[in-house]
Length: 99
Image (cartoon, rainbow, N blue to C red; front, side, top):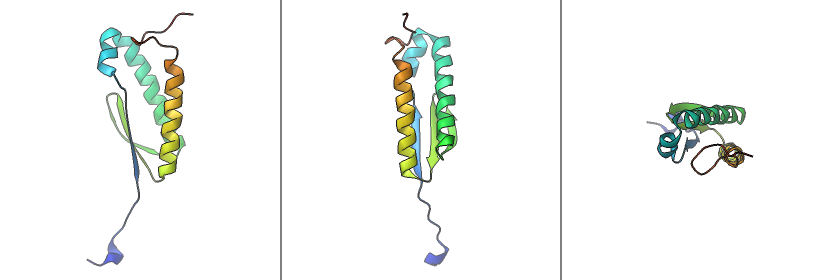
């Protein structure tokens, strides 16, 4: 096979997963499911808006592809920052803090 026929593609892959999902579901199934779905929606929009493509969902996880490693890292940082801010309002068991 001639090297002229080979097609090469640089791809950055991002895999996101909710840490402690089973534990959180055990303590608040409905609340955890609602929050995870909201976060997956946010992450999916962020991935698309930053030039990525969601390849697959698997429960509490997303597999995404980017043609740019810089875009993948920036997207991951944006998603992590948003998750950090949302989690500030939660107790360690996943329930919402009261003011």
